Amino acid sequence: MQPTYEPVIGLEIHGELLTKSKMFCGCSADYGSAPEPNTLICPVCTGLPGAMPVVNKRATELAALVGLALNCTINPHNTFARKNYFYPDLPKGYQISQYELPIAEKGWLDINDSPLPRGDELSAGRQLRVRVRRVHIEEDTAKLAHEKKSALIDFNRAGVPLLEIVSEPDMRTVDAALDYATKIRAILRYLGVNSGDMEKGVLRFEANVSVRPVGSDELRTRTEIKNLNSFRALVRASAYEIERQTKVYENGGQVIQETLGWDDVRGVTVSQRGKEDAHDYRYFPEPDLPPLHLSDAWIDLIRSRLPELPEARTNRFIAEIGLSPADARFLTSELFLADYFESVLAKAKSPAKTVHSWMAGEFMRYLNDSAIDIKDLTFSPESFAQLVDMVTDKTISGNSAKAVLNEMFKNGGDPAQIVKEKNLVQVSDTAFIQEAIEKILGDNPREVAQFLAGKETIIQWLMGQVARATRGKADPNVAKELLVKALEARRK
Image (cartoon, rainbow, N blue to C red; front, side, top):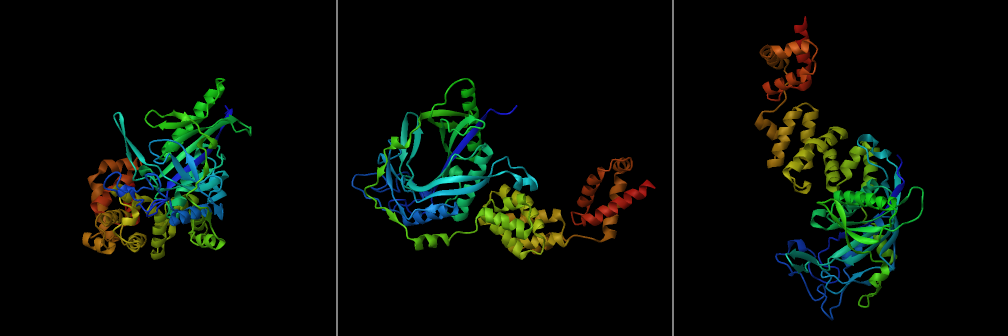
């Protein structure tokens, strides 16, 4: 049955900028390392009367960099405004933001507008260009901690530079919204403007969701789901809200414009307040801050700092290195992973696909199991390249390489030295391997009979016994060839 309603989704993404000081004062922005609440504060970020804000130059540069990466036009003349609303976490009673003249606007980002299949079909998804309405700078709020009937306020986060990226409502599937959010996060990390650590709340999503009859161009009443701090929450909350609104219309009701929260435990959206429009915030120009005037030379200087972005790097890995779209996207999903891969590839003699296979497999498994950040590895890309090459040239077996890699993750070290100390050099001596095979077949007549009766899968079990008997040192290709010959000889 074809759906009668389709979703219309726009995203607002808030990301804290990686600056040393806050947006409008000299207090440290590293509130995560503050020893106590309310220690990284001053009259400006606590909103005391008479305090005068000053624009953070570094935050302005990072915001312009993001705007350029998203194909935006940088406004050479942009202004700050007061966004008035009253919550306990907003010390001044208003937020300094940008409204009529943001630092960047009218950009775009290409995404996939269909579920992303696995494997080499990854590039076959339908492409969609999502328009980026604006990129602007503002200040973050304080943090609230609720204890029984009380609320405690920590102003250490108040005033931290915050970037808001607002899309047009161009996405028609939850998968499209997920791909857009994923790519924005990757771009922010590539640019070094945000850590992307959503668990710490430094990157947050807000989804504007509505539904309309399929084939219609109308924009119906939308709801805004606030403060989604994971991709999983973004997907679940958006999908739930699409289903909820569809049922409202199907039952003859009307969707109410409101701001919603997401209850992750119950898996439902919950009403927080009536949705504000721009006029509700009573925007007016910030009288204490002059307009920013950005010269063409300054904008060109920021543009020159743009690195190779994820999409361009993905295309290069496909065209120049010969990786599949799926493999390339995996490697370019994180800046340091892509950098590490290229460093390994520059040192390795093995093919790129072999290097990728080891990185996507055992390397990532050990990385995840050990909870080590790739930036903190105790061995160099050159050492990892040496290990992969030792498997390629059959100096050691794949199983032995896994043991060596495990040791490298734990204690670092030179792979050749580890192989020597553990006596893991691969053996291709047919006499040695043949002797082990004959003993194994003699000790396991039932399994031999099963193979001869047609159960050929038993050979994998027998190969495991050969690997165990030779302590993983037997060349698996040689061992399998000798094993098959020995089994066939018994058939006669």
